[in-house]
Structures are given as structure tokens and as C-alpha cells.
Image (cartoon, rainbow, N blue to C red; front, side, top):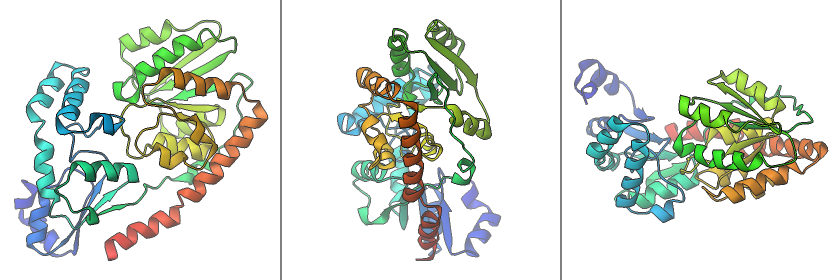
Length: 330
């Protein structure tokens, strides 16, 4: 709002035809419309309907402002008392965002599922304003991924100990996997608190090897995909278009993913579709893991190849680029 009152910004806006907002800057929308500028808003999450930009899965079971708000406040409580207090006081902010978004010309969503949820919740917005354009994946980085999984299956998890990423679901599944006869390696990346590290280290035994790498670079992640059999993705929120799942497809790592957000659109019409499971469903999660652990190395390599080919066709960089260009020019 301060930006909208500066001479430099108003001059910049006057000299251009389109205002593109990728996040947060919704107060600029009415300023641009008063100057007869086209406004495009790219929605990468659920900020217009949720204080922390997250929506629990499945959305239909939490439908309604009150239940989503309660879930959001409880999630913030897991991150500390200050976060909980701020969420309790500022839960109304999305309502303000919705009023500004009413004046936008186009709302770009990154998946059909995200678009349906937002439009259903924001019934004051003209549904014809919304379009879906998938986010691009820089798949050139994955062209050099030569899959070489070892004789001991490697399971990759990249969500950290975040509650909404399904860390608790993962812990429960790992407790059961310790009882399997088959040896496995689980690699975990991202942030883990001392308490989470303690819980993970307690799960180690002679059948389950746990490697906790913490935060790693993008190129290091790509290297991990070379040796990984699967990606574990037990998220419990409606992730619009999770890059982790998209990248696993391009890398040929079989995603065992909860049926949330844009996941069905990413894995749809591929063999990975049958490895989805209900969010929070530990038993289903385990069934899918054990199903892949029972496959031969040859079967896994064939699936890996098919996933990569399907991903390249479905998320064509040229097609996405054309859609984005058209969005600005029409």
C-alpha cells in the first residue's frame, strides 16, 4: 500500500500496459484499474482464502470458512505460541484480499484442483476470470539423471518435519517398515528440529538405514534422484502443484503421494496413479510402499522410463511458455 503512493511506482505503472502480481501485492489492483491497466494475478497457493495460504485435504471435509480457519490456527500452534497468536488475530486478512481480487482481469491458477477450491470458496469472484496454467519445470536439469538404484531400495523424502507435509504420517509408516524383512534406505532432506531428529534416530535398526541430510542444494537433490527408487510424499494439505512430485516424475523416481491438490493431475494416466493414497492414510501409504518394494529392479527401471516420458509430454515447456505469453497479449 505504501508502494502504491510513491511517485516512482505510479510513473512505472503509467508507462506500462499490464500489472502482473505473483503474490501479496493485491492492494495495487484498484490503483492499476483506475489507470485502466490490465491486471493479472498469479495464485500459487490459497492466500485469498486461508491466512497461512494452506487448505487442509480433502477440502470437501473441511469446507467452510470456520473449519478451515480452525485448522489453520491449529497448524500455526504447532510452530509456536507467537505464530498461534498472530493467526488468531489476523485470520480475517483473506477476506480483504478477496475484495481486491474482484477487480483483477485474470486470475491464474497452477492446477485445476487449486482453481476449483479457490473459486468454490470465493463465490464473489467471476469464475470466467480464472484460467489454469501449469508451472514450468526446468527439466533440462533432469536430462542427465541416469537412474542407478542399488540392490537395497532407497526411499527419498524432502518435506522436513513440517506437520502439513505429513511428517507424522511418515514417522508412523517408518515404525511399521522396521518390521519388514527387506532392507531399505530412507534419505530425508530439509529442516528437522532436535526433537524430530531424536524420533528419527530411534527408528534405526539393522533393516532400515536412515540418512538425514538436512537442507541441500537443488543439484544435490537431482543427484539423490539418481539412486532413489521412490519419492515419499505424504502431504496432508491441498498442495496446488507440488514441485517435488513433478520433479520425481521427470527424474523417474516413483512418487508414492497422497491424493491432494494437483497430485492427481501430475500422475494421472501414468502407473504412478495407482500408488496414490488418502491423505493421512498410514495403512494405504504402507501398502503402496510395500507394493513397490516387491517389484524387480527391471520393473522399476521400466516404470521410471515411462514416468519420464509422460512427464515431458504433459508438462511441455513450449506449451506452458505459449500459454503464459498469450495471457499477457490477449
